[in-house]
Image (cartoon, rainbow, N blue to C red):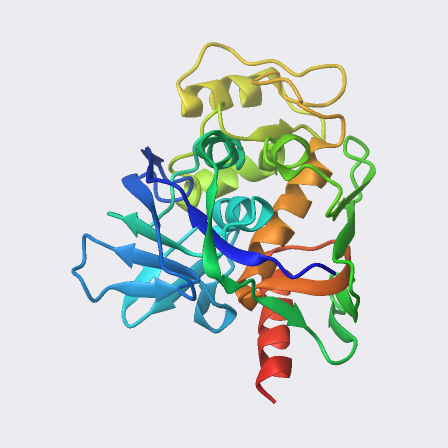
Length: 305
């Protein structure tokens, strides 16, 4: 395949908003970076030395999002931003952030992709970093049945199957290759949650920044009117309702398989922690942050041998 040059942003981009899990407001600025930098988060609220490199060995938590930590500094819920940077072809960037969690925005990667698309990228005087794996790598979770398999290939691709045993979602499939326009086909796809999970998440302080504007809510099991009213109260919005297709009416789907596409968005972001563009065929079944980042670590380990 054609060997491309590394790229960085043509200018700075600023994003502000609350974190999904902490509810804390953060200001985040994406800045151009020299060739060979990679993706580097800088916790500017903690001082000049609070740097966290976006690499698999720095993953410190995968509890409903991906967190990376290095030298006492952490940044959480990085997956949507990482996905956008990878999907839009950004190799080098400094991410200056003044709090622990990346803003959730609308629950997708659309804002990042649109900003990058509008102003373009700058080609740098260094070859793009491609990751060629020496052999097939497979990671499995016997308990959940999840797996990810990576096979060496000169034409990168990712395909996945999502199966939550849900009558609302059904079995959804999604795929990416170099012919897929990331900005229009994947970036707009938002995160999702099941209705029956929400109260538990609130009680365990896991979605302090959740609201009806940044997540698709799937109503899998019958719910009472009181439960819907309580959710409306939690989100401090007028009374919500359930659509005929089994989704809460807080928003309209952007694609019939938006949830499956969002899982692909997440997988792209987590695999970017491998440190470059994978020259491989990736096949995944029931992926999630834990197995995604385990695969990124396995790739890093294979390259270090």
